[in-house]
Length: 122
Length: 400
Image (cartoon, rainbow over all chains, first blue to last red; front, top):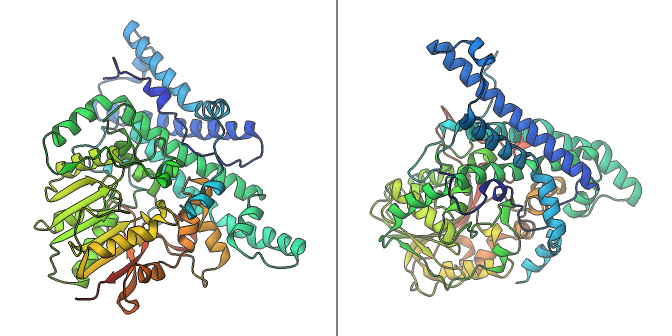
């Protein structure tokens, strides 16, 4: 499904909304770090749920043993798929830095206060 | 021990014919966000009031020798407090993650979603797009609620990415508070009107700012004989909304690209019911009265006008509550939110033509399957701006 897509959906998913982002800490590095920490926290939760799903299904079916999982090595195709997964993962984690960089490269966004004042009167 | 209160799993969301198909991890991401939002609102949220009462307000009074005079002064003072700063930053990130998570799920399957939409939309006269309708400034100035591309954005011409992304993430933002089809608002309208006017069957209903139609489909299904028009300026969400409505069997519902500031294509008194749900705060100072005025004009004598919104900031609402309800205005790209909630909507409706004695307000709570989905919370644990509890501002137009 993703093959032959005419745009890079992984990077497009990270698109920043139009409108200047509020500064919470007065320090762009802190903003970046918090965004990464929260995204990582989410991914750890996702991973934990996935593992939980697998464990429950294994428990139900008895189809696999834990030893097989420990000994698993991906073949070439699986290696590619896992690489793609990691690429998307990295993009998701790097949303904050990517958005800050893009804001820096764009013409400056207007503060919401300014836009608010304008919308009252148009 | 009582059952621990957690949001329902994302897999409880109903997958109508247009719903993006979530993979395991995509559902798990929304599960995380629903829980994170609940934690930020219910657990860390009350810390804002505590910081205000114990530190920020006393410091403000010491510095200025008086109480803050408005919600803006409170905001500037609170923005210096570490707890509020962290809470706001975390909440903003949660909004951004919700968009990222929704868009990544939708965009990777966009070919499939567009194909499905085409099946539902092709050749149907219930979807009427008009490329001459411009995106109004109040919709294009910033991307509303941090939704990249807002309601009108496209990844490629004619796609349904905006609607699909909006629809699939409502669960996470509201912690499931709007129910399996995110239509708890629309379900509430059905329940309300059946109590208010038992047996009443409107001939025609106009829903303004319908986006993906999630709040109007329940009315279309409840009144299958009624002709219902849902308008929006954004083709991108209408395409998705029409396909969604068709997949849910709402065939008496026509989606029309139109700007409610000019309803001249419909004659006076054409509709028995004109409504908006959580829409007026996404307009502007001059557009809002024009929309109410046009709505009044196309409303039949004896007809109903109804607007669902968060409560207005009346003089008797404490300034702190006004401040915390204002969070979305400055932190979640809702640039008309603050000014709109400071309006007296009842006065605006009188200006539009209604008699004062015909106005009413009432509380409306999302109707959801409470065996699975949570009942909306009010008060300290409320997620202001997203709580599935609204004020309805309404009027029955005087009979001719």
